[in-house]
Length: 294
Image (cartoon, rainbow, N blue to C red; front, side, top):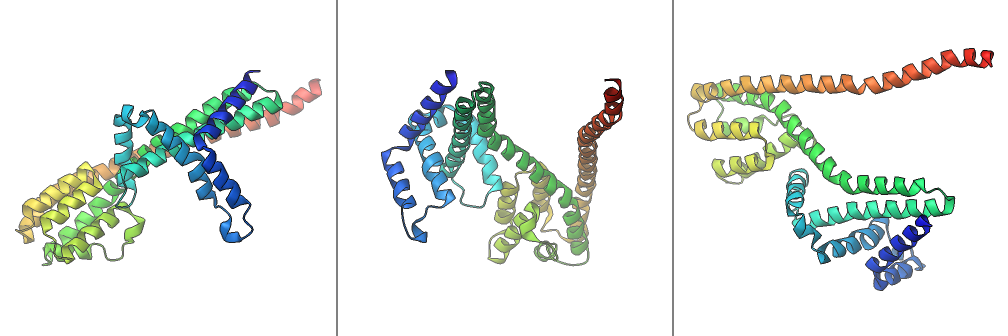
């Protein structure tokens, strides 16, 4: 009984949120004879999931009541996505995650009704909550990975910079040559470093380029690096190298600490497969003895 009420109620709410015009547009496109009239999966998702739930969240001022979590989520997406990311795009992402969780709950409610299994409704509630919260957790995890990648590569870039400046290069030339042989699109630090070099080549001031580089990276170690650069880049030569050398020692120690923590995480992740293999071996060894006894 509970599964029938839940499935009908969830489906009715979804139909109401989507609106008559949305369903008419979908049926019209699905009935189109030409290939170009067929609606893509992304368009279906936009019409059935993103737009209805975004309208609902805005109507009931959910975004306003959750301005702190939404602000944190928006700042994470600003770091992860390309330039031009707006708060409306963040709201659409949040609405999509909420809609996917709602869709999973609705599907499990119908499965519970058709299969006469009430436990599926509970599974649907848990699955829906996980799907709704997953993008927020995933964004935080990706930001932390991005930070670690930058800290790992920054000491190497700093060593190259010191070597080039000590050999007689200007700071501008050394910053550009540090990127030689690097795939800028494959690494967040190289990407932001390359954009700073492009700004310098286009006539921007060194201070403006470094401030933007610091703001886009949003990592404490990079902030210290840019501060040292801004304070000492005019001096050049040995004075510049000496100013960066102490920072280089600190960054190499942080790189070692991250490497150790990653090794510990990898070893801890191996525990679960080993326990599973042990259980399988125990079953294989004990099963013949149990069968013989029976």
